[in-house]
Length: 288
Image (cartoon, rainbow, N blue to C red):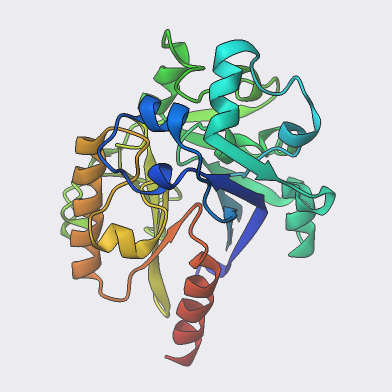
């Protein structure tokens, strides 16, 4: 019996960001953040829903609607001003994580496991709706919460360390598995090989990607904010948020994995094409 029965993508609203956020121009982030006047067209805030025999698995949880309704959601002062220049969100009442799960015939209590690619606000927004789930995050990412400049680096601790949540800190271990080369470390979520976490630091120090593999279904790699669209990833044009060297290394590793698996579907958090890419992949899998 195949452990995964369905893979879906939902979007908890949309976001406009700076063009330099999507693709680095070489300018320091603080410079373009303070000087740019341009915004991208709205991009989705994707959450991937994987229905596994052990329960529903989410890759990321989207943006909290309170971020557009509660004036106290973001920090005040200079840091709050930087947040307002970084992104503009639009989230309707029917675009919460709970409502999106219900549209798939699921409830938040059905979620068994949450994988967070990283801890930025547009990936942790649904945590308050997921009290019954185990939440996986990189131990390296979690350590950033205690850093001196955590808020300045996009980590809003009061929206992350919520009471009642069950956290599991993950450190990918040496794998000795040639099938994931050039990656040498992994964390197998259920021990069945179907969902494997791979370290892809760069956007943040502890960013994780999730590799899905199942016979009869094209392999998929959920990459969070490693890229904002697959064409830029293929061309090794990295985002303007994060450490360029780390982004470059992780991008090259993902592209090498793509060479190993030509039918690998790469799905990012804010790629407008992600829904179409996933639908086409599932159609191919059904036809094969």
